[in-house]
Amino acid sequence: MPLGTLRPSPLVEQATQRLREQIAAGHWPVGGKLPGETTLAKELGVGRSTVREALRALAGAGLVRSRHGAGVFVIATEPAEDWPTRLRRAAVTDVYEVRMGVEVQAARLAAARRTPEDVTALRAAVEGRRAAATADDAAFVEADIALHAAVVTAAHNPVLSDLFTEFVPVLREGLIAVLDLTSLRETDPGTGDHAHAGLVEAVVAGDPETAAAVLEAELQSTLRLLREGSAEGA
Image (cartoon, rainbow, N blue to C red):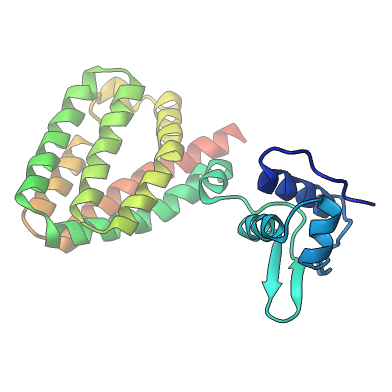
């Protein structure tokens, strides 16, 4: 099947798309070797540099891999999902289990590394969560997440912060669902206030193990509710 000469426009994007279509159609099967740059450039009607950039894009999508001295080989027919996409598709309980590992470690680090600015932010976050007790579930969840984000920020580890940020959309959805399925806030509008205040005070006091223990217990409690909700909805 000839590739066909490309129209003038963003050539790298066109070349990438054309090659991706051929790979998806099985023209070059998984494990198969692509033609050389010169051959591809001739079939596509572009320069070798355009082909080279297109192959880099395909490699970044997880479709091909270059083997030094051997050429470029197909390793998948569908692009690899990026991390945010995989999180959106994951079960919220699975995400929560990973969240626990991230946040419990962040709490330990926060207790050791918090600055006066962090202390101010943490105490403000506790008050913000309390104030949101009279708001709707969505606003309350936002205030809850803001407090947890403040703890992660106080850990001063950008990797932990980035991981937590990636989790937030899934966590928001899961927490709102839990509050919707339970009557927690009907009897206790600021549910979890004591535990969250204890977490912040442990961080402020520089007590890593207490901070970690309080947070783990709180997250375990929420995880149980998520699992019960998943079981009821099955």
